[in-house]
Amino acid sequence: MPRATSFGLRAADYDRYRPTPHPEALDRVLPERAATVVDLAAGTGLVTRALLARPTPPAVVIAIEPDARMLARVDGAARAQGAAEHLPLRDGSVDAVLASSAWHWFDAEAATAEIARVLRPGGTLGLLWSRADPTVDWVDDVRTIGRAATDGSARLSRRGFACTLPEGHGFVDDTPTAVHVRWTRTMTRDEIAGMVCTYSGVLELDPAAQREVFDAARARLDELVAGPDPVEVPFETVARRWTLEGAAPCE
Image 1 (cartoon, rainbow, N blue to C red):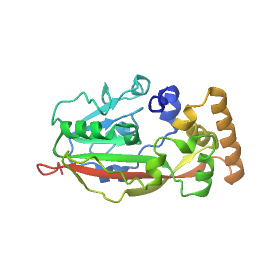
Image 2: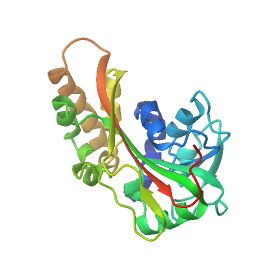
Image 3: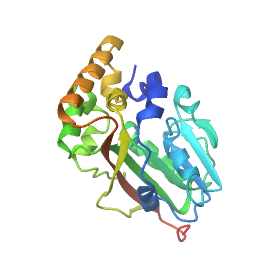
Image 4: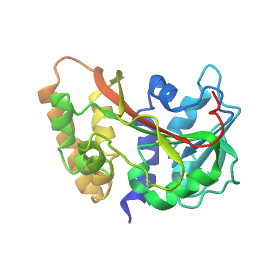
């Protein structure tokens, strides 16, 4: 099974344990008056929920996801099964496209062309990555268990999320340096170990090996993190934004 389609095997755990992008990071990538926003590679709808929870949510949120098992968990928004390289949308029909922890799974050339096609001039592409903060020693240590640290975004992470769009599609880079928003989330040790098992490097393993990863992560947490449950887990959301050349942006 391709790694990009492995998440549906643990859709419920993904939905429960993976972090939602921080609101401040959404502010950095989303035009203030964007009326129609696409949550691309929506997964279980973590970004969709964050958009709908904003003080002034977009009038229309469309969740697009290739895996029906993940898409079935999206609620409160329009849903469509589809991929970044073939978007089921009309030309110039949306104000913003957001993709969270997903760009590394796309064919960059085809996806960039499709996103440029469906955006209105002045619309934005926002890329987000949310993760437990690897600059914290115990977080980095736990992520090395099994193959959790080999998830699909690992290469981008090592480059500091220095992501460059293919040229020729009219995008202007609004954030040459990635924006990092740091925050904390309260989780039990079992929940943290469960989150480790939602990364693609672990999902490639057989069920018995996945259980071994969970048990090893749980034991390591007992060694490294003092105090009772729950614990404050440090997270960060990394944000990048591009604007499609043309008319003035929505804001």
